[in-house]
Image (spheres, rainbow, N blue to C red):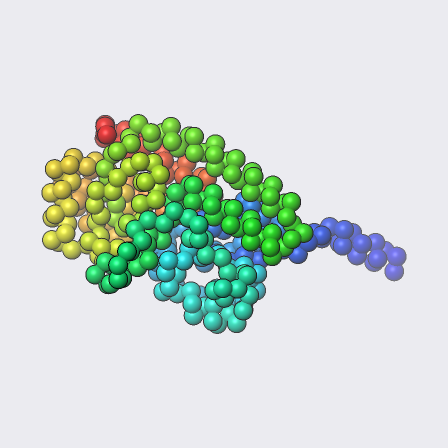
Length: 305
Ligand SMILES: [Zn+2]
């Protein structure tokens, strides 16, 4: 009997003194930031993987189970998740994570959101960015805002962890500031350079690093390439001597390859999210990876702004 209680005592002593906050995120980027801020106090699960198109995620039954047990759901908002998430929230029957509840965090709040429509939203603007560009996590300063929002919400949901969240946030922000110096130094010489991207995934990234999107392989966000648009794009690229095309890992490379051949531009598989490649293992590593890819491509092409 004594032996059993000793074993039990050891088990109890080893158990953490706090309950884990279960977090589900739409993107691995938010999960990475939440892990950095929450450390051991949180457990995260991302629905979309970094190598998948975040607009089009295949809902799995396991997602409903994860959502049903979640204390906090973090989304990009701006309708990025409109195609799959609302029915999953319904099926989870978890009122804690419904929009408006304390366990629902729209990460776009407070971030620098680009391309917000000023007039009436119509389908003519494209299919998938009706309320502004939802790829805003690709500006590291928006990452800082997201981290602060996550820390504040975790502190609200789990007040006993306030000091831990404050420390986690401070450590993350310090890494972000350090990283920012590296990234700015690497891309600084290319300020003003025009590039082409497949989908309009990088306006925040480009704005932050003072680069310019001259055009897109897609005629409008969410609309596949068309021959007429491709011809126009090729002519524009030749005229402007554009040397780099950035392409998300989840698109077919037939059109971008053809455009690269016709224009002599370098086609780069750029990574829009944590987990897009194993090297982009967290939010800081994502920028390290992308900035190196882009500077290598620009340097190889001898691009001068
Ligand atoms: Zn998009």
